[in-house]
Length: 331
Length: 304
Image 1 (cartoon, rainbow over the protein chains, first blue to last red):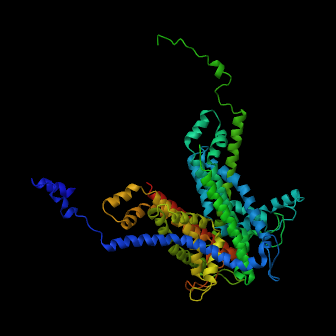
Image 2 (tube, chains in turn orange, yellow; image 1 turned 120 degrees about the vertical axis):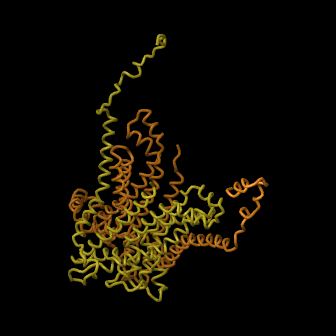
């Protein structure tokens, strides 16, 4: 453009004279540049496929490792609760029960807390600086390593909740879920520490979901004369429910796979008990405790348990994605 | 107006039954207040654990901070004093190995998903796989690396090693890095790319000089958060990097990390070890919180 106009102004000659001159010749891209372009594309393709390779590698490694135990224990592995390295008899029922009970009960506590907190920091009940402060603190809670939470649970939370657990035992001792006297470690403290760990996930996802509800829906609800909580319960929460449910499912997957804090506080007992006050076990904590020292078929049995854990978390995570996609906002 | 409207509305029938005044004793208003109270209590409960954990980590760990903590080895069983110098170096080293693997692979994978794939089956599979990988429990990453690196002894016949621990952490970091790169690149306006093509840039030059730098902020934020998360991970290190009571001896030997040290020392019945666990928690939490604030600062810096 520049050269063109300056040339055109310099003389009365044909102003289009320079169009096919040097400045505007199409430069052929040298082969090296093309090669670089193609090479970079292939490189990113290879790097992207690392994800697929790692994922398949995880499945194959765990499946291969579990084959020996699958052959010798079969499906009874899921229902037998004895874990006996001396007689080489292995069953993961205690750990599976522990995994399901701790994760589901912790979610039952964390869902109202997390969604309530999310509502509190998305509504304009208090100044926005305070709300942002609470949001920041919940996010920082997610950043605390689980092993530090475990340490805190052993030395601070465990002793602190002991009286409450004793009281529960006295009050509800007739039911199989509270019929053992609380010792130091147990399922109940593990559930509480899981609540602390999944709370930030549920809060963060619920907050994003609530923030994305269009303002018009809220204004419409106020316009027909409802109160704040009328709007929340009948308009805003239903509009955000798909994302919240997805977030809850992700939190469930996280709770099932959570290892360190649970291992440190659950007691790692293989004696099956319904009681929440008794020591228990989860698949993840069993792996953390035994994998380093196991050999022979015990490794295979642990791999089998790892496979069960993978299938559980995989199912939950895929269900989470499906829910978010399937039930996405429709108004 | 001189000409009043002949039509008059009888408003009384509609409106005079209820005064338009806020009546705090109406059921709906009481219920409103009740739920607001419940939500604020829930928010207070949600903040409580962070306050308590930070308080105890600062109190129990902070009072143990000394020069020796950073320069000495953990004491033998039954001995007093000592430090966590080897574990601090170990955490930095293992996290560095993980970052050196996960960041190039993750950024490259994110570039592929955002810039080169046009929603084919492979891209869909990779991005689905990425979400699945993000949900894989961290202990499973440890099992995977144990099975592929530790037992096969691929690194010069060494079984447990800092390298194996780094790879396990990289497996956990990878999904986050890919996701943040992909989402960061998606935010870059299409006009920037067209502008680059328009002045004759090749695709490679466009990505390297235009698209990637424009998305620097979200990518850097995500990467810093991923590193912080990896530094605190314990489960994948227990049976990959293992532990060591000595100074690090190269990347192909077992290595101490702060997170494994906290785990090992917390469950020991010795006070000296328990105290070192608190001290290590203090150092680790400070590092991770600093990284989180750094990430926030990066995000804010370029927003203005």
